[in-house]
Amino acid sequence: MLYIKLRMSGILQSLSKTIHLSLGLSILLFLGLYFGNDGFDIDQVFWSWLFRYIHVIVAIMWIGLLWYFNFVQIPNMAKIPDEQKPAIGKVIAPAALFWFRWAALVTVVSGLILAYLNGYVHQAMTLGIGSGGGKATAIGIGMWLGIIMAFNVWFVIWPNQKKALGIVEVEADIKAKSAKTAMLFSRTNTLLSLPMLLTMVIAQNLY
Image (cartoon, rainbow, N blue to C red; front, side, top):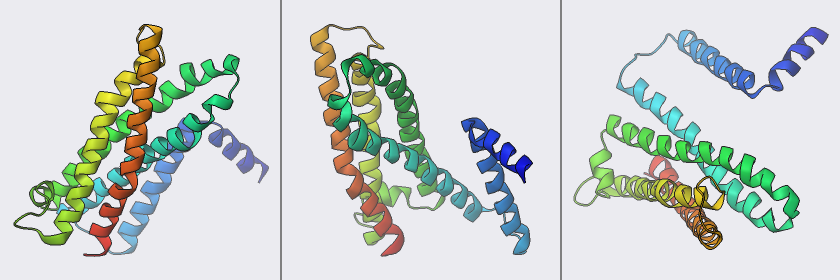
């Protein structure tokens, strides 16, 4: 028992080992469900499930980090002593922004692949106008909101955050202006996040 506790403690103190163990457990569960229920075909339905799983995972990371910035980091920056702020700006924020922007990209790409595999990408992107009905309209609105939010991440928030955090050297006034622009577009994405999630869930459950 002590050995198990020590082994688990060693694993949980390492993020890499924790993620590998989580992935391993997921694979074991997948194989158990596969062989315990007479298997299933590796067909379009399987690939649709796989990309939905990927889509959900990266979307959780993306929106989770978006809400971290807006519910935790931004509101509390003014409370942090000036001598401690470099720890946020030089270490935590750049690391969070790395996962934030790539999760945004993979969320959009996996979502588009999922829509293609399920045969509704055209109807969704045209908001179901003339075909597809309410479900296509709902999922289409969610997809377009997600694309707009990802565009904001890559082409507004990240370029301005690079200036605000000193990754790109700029004048002090431009640095302050960039920080404000990044904050406003991050807040815009927070504004759009609940409608985006609403339409996604409506499309899957009310139609």
